[in-house]
Image (tube, rainbow, N blue to C red; front, side):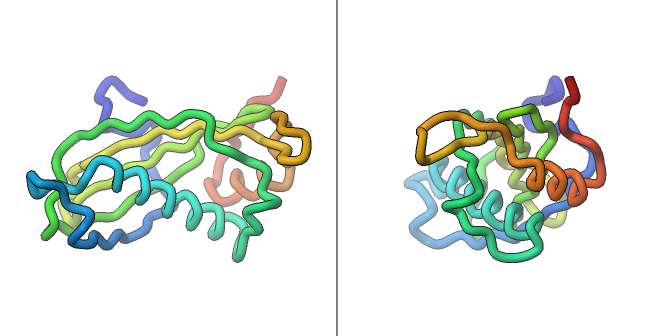
Length: 152
């Protein structure tokens, strides 16, 4: 991330998803509850992988798990605000990928929350980390329009 914790390390996100707040998403102060931001980020990650794959994703075969999440709460979100989330994979290593996401208000794009997630390749049968599948690397790079995997 840049020096400003609410700015992204990339200029353009290819994936956006509108969000709908529910009345029970709001806390006693009238703000979107901080735990709901992460739920919205998870929804967007699932939609991102669906779109990258060009359709349905068998979650039992995708072979990745979340190993780290860092969220920055930048400004409160109120019930009457229209918001959406943008998602991008910004780097791919041998066994992990880094995702950046931002929730912002429309139409002025004021960032409400930014999030960085590290996901690791994972084999559920052996309970061990594994390399990110080459077909996923190819699909993600094609979707993002840039090379992301660091070559040795």
